Image 1 (cartoon, rainbow, N blue to C red):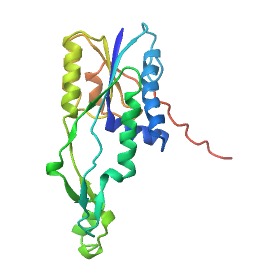
Image 2: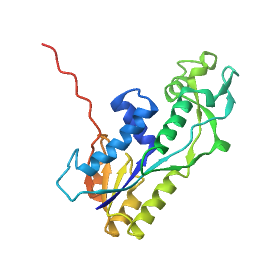
Image 3: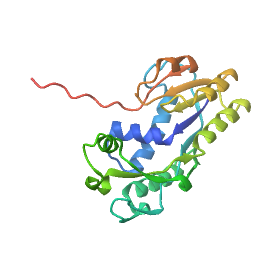
Image 4: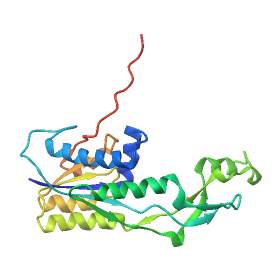
Length: 228
């Protein structure tokens, strides 16, 4: 059985940091690779004995981090996003992924033409309720909003290509939303075994009818035991 892994990068990193805490890019890349290999071994939730799987490829979908400069609208202070810890971590993470066997990066782009500063939701709510006024805003109350483009399209096209060309027998998708449903339907019609790995995140009940299995293999933190 040939298995391809398609990983929503933004979702993976959110869940990874939630489950594992702050780690180095090297540790995160190794954890991603190990997670895929554990799927092939049949570990995790709803695992069942099955023929030995062969790793076709691991496709990782994401966008490069923001590296432009802008001025904070509250203070006018220049901000160089390329120098932020987040940008440095993400770029190093991509480099670590490139070194791993059978990993392919599928990078979209950031739509910087329509990027803008926005208020944090809780701050906007207080402002509209007149609990605070504009003069009370600080530079930490706003964030630079930029949308990624091309990631979902690349993921959908790869699913279609893998299915139509009969390159794999199974697809394991690491994601957490319902955007994948049309592509999953296509793959299943072509006879592909379609597995969803939400990394222990809850999914909507109606998503079960669009997949062939639900399996999470990433190590789950042990809840603290009550003290006597």
